[in-house]
Length: 343
Ligand code: NAD
Image (cartoon, rainbow, N blue to C red; front, side, top):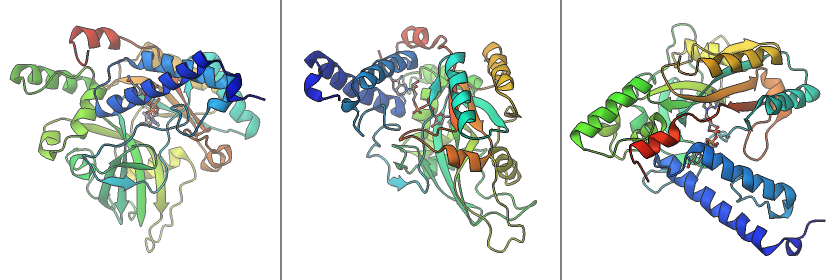
């Protein structure tokens, strides 16, 4: 029923302008130099979604509503991910969270939800072959990322070799996680940067982590106290001759195995059985947002069982079996203005 010719010129022009602006903001954001706050970005995205809801004919594969991340830069070699890296759908209030819970429960019998912190860092993909770290990459556009192996090797908590004390390493393991700078380390880094004048101070820990990880010289990355917590698995082939043929059947069971192999896990995730308990977890961290040593911008809730995850599937950019509950923005904007970064 919708037809581009029925769409007023000003709506079409606004649509085009929003796509251009959002692409530009994404690009800057992934380089670690955003010029608008996340809340402003989310508002522009909301406006774009509104236009596309009213005029679905405007939705193209290239629209920011349909894509993951940003174009990759020419500074690094391209890496094709073994399994696509996705973004996450958002819930900005309890009604949106409940709607996600209702939708999932209507489609599959959800027995358990895994709740974890949404760390405000950047997604990194690690590939281990027979227990050895062979490659690390940024998320990029979800299919192709940037090869940052040398930089990731400088992160202390990322094992070069998987621990095989408990069980043999798998033939192939692609694991995803968030690289971040703990808040105290971020503050110390900015202080040092201000003293030496080597660089413009970073607006927040996320930008500092992004800027540090995307250094062309890994020796610079090595001076930045980056950390990582894993939150997902991509490709996986169990050990051929390890005796124990370990299969991943749920997110929480996968985490237990990743932990045995020495990968850095969060000690704050929780498996719960009901959406009431999910809401409690969300409320707890809304009130204790600064308890973790790193910045969080929300909570991620995942249907724990992998078979159910597969049944729920994904949209073009995000899994339907998970949702990010976003907390309202804090001092980000004031900080951007205070220290005059990127403005
Ligand atoms: P997202 O940050 O909303 O969610 C997806 C990402 O969350 C994943 O890729 C992963 O890296 C991360 N994550 C953290 N903890 C996780 C966990 N426990 N489990 C799974 N994933 C976890 O989506 P996005 O596509 O990366 O970026 C979109 C958001 O980034 C926007 O909503 C906006 O807030 C921000 N953004 C801001 C600007 C800007 O200019 N300020 C530009 C682009 C994007």
